Amino acid sequence: MQTFSFSQLVLYFTLYSVMGWLCETIWCSIGAQKTVNRGFLAGPWCPIYGFGALFILLFADPVKSSPPLVFLISMAAASVLEYFTGWLMEALFQTRWWDYSGRRFNLKGRICLRNSSIFGLLGLVVTYFYQPGAEQLINIVRPETQRVLASLVFALLMLDLIRTLASVTGLRERMENLKAVLDELDQYQQEYTWFEKSDPAGSIARLRGICENESAGEKSALILRRIDAIQQRRGSGFRVMNAFPGMRPKGLGAEHETLRQEWVARQKARREEGRHWLHNLLDGIRQDAGVAYQGVTFTRMIWVFLIGCVAGYIVETAYCLIMTGTIESRQGMLYGPFSQIYGFGAVLMVLLLAPLSLKSNGWLFCGSAIVGGLFEVVSSLFQEAVFGTVSWQYSDQPFAFFGGRTSLLYMIFWGILGTVYIRSIYPRIINLVERLPKRPKRTFTGIIAIGLSFNLLLSTIALGRWSDRAQGIAPRNQMEELLDERYPDEMMEEIYPNMEFLHQSDVLE
Image 1 (cartoon, helix red, strand yellow):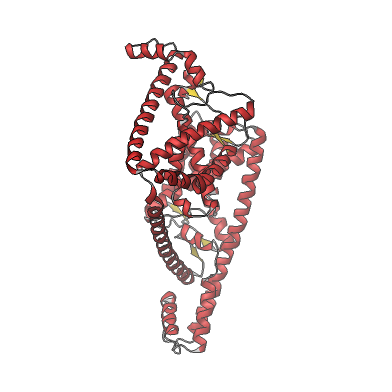
Image 2: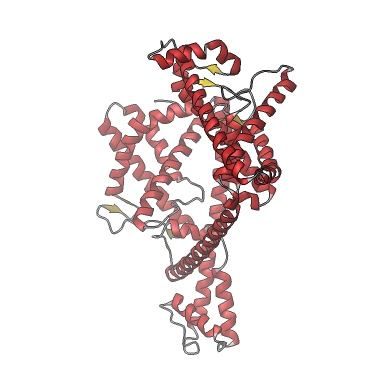
């Protein structure tokens, strides 16, 4: 029999609990045609699946060579677990959480042959398909890290369990208090013509209507306030009612149904409020975007790209001089002081952050950090995939992301740069562009657009050919021969001193 450490058992338990919760949620949501947060606990896990998987791993592993035995053992272990869990929860909470009495071959409604057979099939899937992958996943984590993760998960499970137990207990108390009020009303059926014991939810609705018309007596209004106090108490007990629509508290069926209907009505009202809020939010965003994008034109973006390219080249050169004491090429294109990554970044920030320019600096900083970080990642991936080269790597920094293609430090830099750029630099660029005479501006814009496009295209082709030469690929036509002659390795190394070629395997990875 395979042995596991306590940390591994906790991690396996968590993994299968989450998988079980996901399967249960999808299955029940499809059946109910709405989203159902399935599970007794509030978190995304169903412990019964975690325990079931552990039982299967412990008892079915010795007979893993025989699928029929694995099926039978899984079926038996899961059935015993489900029956015992159902009995224990009924005893603790005086509530039946699921009921298979309407299905054939059931045992006291707690288990049935169909579900047990499904558990047997799941045991086969776990044993032969999921568990090998789960072992590889868990074994990647070092034992020390496993212990830390297991401790954290165990603590979260305990907190979730305690909170849920308190909420479910509170839910039963609300039902019992509601029953006491309804029993009191039952004694005065002649006085309260609106009350029908067989329809407590309808009776409460009728009482509310009377109170709204101000024709209810003082005693009726007092009773209504007591009912409201019972029904409006918050807690995850209502979530459990949604997760287990078939739950039946013993002796409190009518009260449970009354609270359930009240909860459904409240959820419907919340959804309406949410849709109204979202509608207003989207309208506000559309209006803000309309205002923010009024000044975004093709002509302006060409000048923004040009100034961004030049400013980026200057900043990069100055940064290199300060940090290393040397002056080296920071060009991104073959000709001119242009760094296109800054040009594209300047345009992208305007296009993506324009709506945030109407909000606070905090929003703008966070948006700039995310946009700048993702832009670095995409640019690095593009360079690696197309040219097989890298120009920056932050793996040695703390909090590096996406394989060192960006880092928290540089995302903070992007956040500061983007905020200053949108708030101060970009308006000055637009002001400068608008001060240019219209006709010369159109002419110069066309020349700049064509020149930069040609420069960028030629640089891309030359870099591609340089990458081919680094892999030993001979020229295949006259164009490539001309590129080898006009842009040899020495020249390319001088223009791009920080560019490093990767092995082909690294590029594919």
